[in-house]
Structures are given as C-alpha cells and as structure tokens.
Image (cartoon, rainbow, N blue to C red; front, top):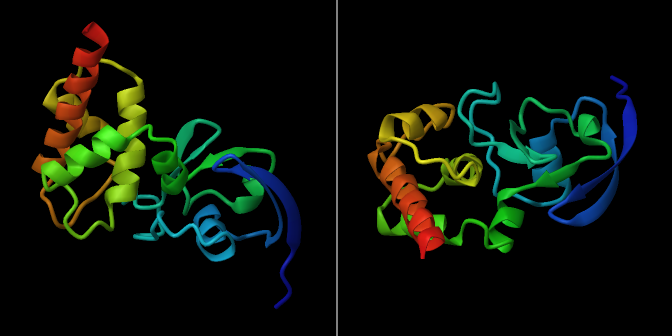
Length: 163
C-alpha cells in the first residue's frame, strides 16, 4: 500500500520543526512517535476522551482528530511545553494536593483544558467548571478532586490579582 507523504513546518513548544509525514498521520501520533513528546496520550482515538488534547494556534484541539499535515505553519503547544512555560505550575501543584491525578493518564489533557478555562479569567461556579471540562474523561478520580483543584486555582489566581 503506497502512502502519500507531505513536508510540513510548524512550531512545537517554541521550536521550529520540519518533517516529512504520511498524509494521514494524526497530530498526536506525530508528536509521540516522531518528536517523542509522549505527554499527550491516545485514549479513545475518536475525540471523545480528551487525553490527546494539545493547543494549535492557541486553541485546545483533540490531537487524534487533527492530521499533522493540517498543522503545517501552525504553532503547537503540548503538555511538555505548557509545563515548561510555568503557566500551570499552580494548577499542577493543586492537582497533586487534591489528589486529582491518580493514574495520570488523563492528567495532561485535563491540564490543557483547565489552562484554557483559567485563561478566560472568569469567575465560574462548580457546575460551569464541570461543563467546561466535560469533554475530558477520567476513569480514576471521580472528577470531584479535579473540579476542586481547578476551582481552588481559579480562586487563588483571582486573589493574587486583587492584592
């Protein structure tokens, strides 16, 4: 079976990347297999679980639904880049404190989505946080600890702004 290959150039976690990829290679496969950025996980491979969430041009997307070739010219941020930027260090610490990351499989996607929510800087009720996070599945923690961690981080950031 012959595959079409495409040349792509993109920025991943702040670094210019050039590669030749199969036309049908998903972004998350490219990140994991070609760039060895294994923080984003393959869960359902149907865009339902959120484990493969990454930012493309500032918007959180499902890496299993986006082709690497579609990201030609784009700026991609993975959980590794998000962690290195220190954007979510407070959220990560609160996830640990609240025991919101038991097996850790869903945690990168949860952090990516929660970072998008926190960037909105809106005061949100628990049910609104739960709704925003509803596209990310966790099979271990039962969500209460995850919602707690996001809510605590949101309030701490708002307190810091006020002082």
